[in-house]
Amino acid sequence: MTIMALSRAAASRGFFFALILVACCSLMLQAAAAAGGGADGVVVGADGDNKLMMDRFLRWQATYNRSYPTAEERQRRFQVYRRNMEHIEATNRAGNLTYTLGENQFADLTEEEFLDLYTMKGMPPVRRDAGKKQQANFSSVVDAPTSVDWRSRGAVTPIKNQGPSCSSCWAFVTAATIESITQIRTGKLVSLSEQELIDCDPYDGGCNLGYFVNGYKWVIQNGGLTTEANYPYQARRYQCNRSKAGQRAARISNYRQLPQGEAQLQQAVAQQPVAAAIEMGGSLQFYSGGVWSGQCGTRMNHAITVVGYGADSSGVKYWLVKNSWGQTWGERGYLRMRKDVRQGGLCGIALDLAYPIV
Image (tube, rainbow, N blue to C red; front, side, top):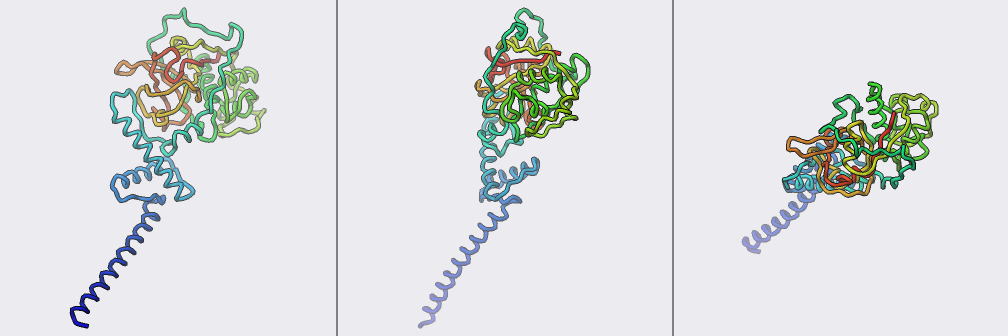
């Protein structure tokens, strides 16, 4: 073999070995990315946007102390988080909105998962008791103030958190409205027990399905409601503790159900916080501030407490709503919802209304 032929053969073998080396390195890099692309095993793509999003996801996990049982589940949650962040940013970029969306504790949940965990499958059908004494009509009252905020009057307890394992918004609203009217009448603000309602109220389904009107009925029947400190929240239904339920800290004598309509709601909220039901869904999952005026219907699936109303600096009128998802959602746990939109109110807020009487 000539020297030139030997050189060509050696070069060919060198090129072949180089190809093998490149392939091996590529496989090693892919394995390293899958195993160590982040502290939680999230696969990191080559593009910068993906890396930035992964960094945001890891910070979000640290903020909310979120972990996952497998690498596959972590990757799936990362993809859900990415889609949610893209939706939030696209919505906020649209402009001309009276509200903003933002990252919160629900950022790794699909809308279906969020609704399943934090709302009820549907509020019970509205059942209005017979008898005029149960009805309230404020059509003759015309002097309601232009704005009300019962928080500033010391009649609203701090935001609470029902958690993802118990669909108990109805109990939080029952307790919240009794807390407020008790403070208005006595000057004493005491946090009352949602857990007592969940465990002991036979008219409702505990963590499954409930209705604040039924809650009022049971509190009247029981002779009152004990404190949260005495009967703390457990986020699941247990057997009723009769001993604790007998230690009553607040009582009500009756309740009122209101005719439908925002005018009726305003007249009632001018006197005290009011229990209401809304359809909670869509982008409300990521509501972070402003006056909500987005899309929603009237398929009631969540109970809330209306603790005031007013108008923002631009003159946009709103209802001030106390929610039960902790302070990391919305405006430190509160929602401002567009007011005077239609007869039944935005998201049906003025369709099913009641309040307790001391």
